[in-house]
Length: 239
Image: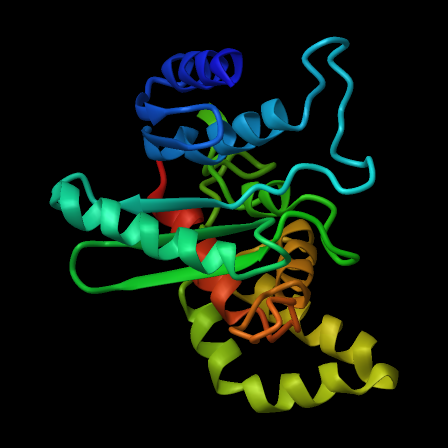
C-alpha cells in the first residue's frame, strides 16, 4: 500500500494537483479541472496493475473493486462544502455494482449541480471514464472546426430537448424493435445541438449504463439526461 500511495501522490503532482490524503486504498486530492478525469483514470489503473510484471488485472476474475468520485466545483466554493459534495458522490458510487463504480458531478456554487453514476464497465460501456472524456476539451485546437472556423460547443438546449421528449424516448428505448429509432432520435438531437456522432454514441452508452437509484445497485439505464448534464458542463465549462 505504501508503494501505491507514493505512486498516487506522484501522479497527482504531475498533473499539477495536491494529494490531501493517500493511504494506498484511500485517496483524496485536488486538481485542475482539466486534469481530474485523467488523474482518476491513472489512479484506478495503478490499483489494477500487478506491481511485479505491470500486468493489467482489470479483466481477471473478481478484480479489486474501486469506488471513486470526481466532483468539479467553483474555485470560490468553501472547502468543507467541496469535501461534503465529494463524499456524497462517493457514497452513491459505493451503492453500485458491489462498490465498483464511478460518480462524476459538478456544483457551480450558485446551486446548480448534477451527477452521473455507473459501474466502471458494463456490457454497454467498456470504460466509463473514456466515454466521459469524449466531452473534455481537446487541446489548443479546441473550438476550431475542419474549415478553420469556430466550432460550436455542445448546447445546453440538448438537455431541454431530452427532458421534453423523455417519455417518448423512454417508450422507444423500452421496446427492442424500436431501439434503432431511439438511438437515431438521440443522435439527431445531439447533432442538432452542435455535438458530433462520437458524442452521440458516448451519450447513448452512458445512458444505457446509468444507475438511477435502484436498491440492488445495478444500472437499469435511462434516457441520457444525467449524463448530458455532466457532458455539457465538461464541454463548456472545463478549461
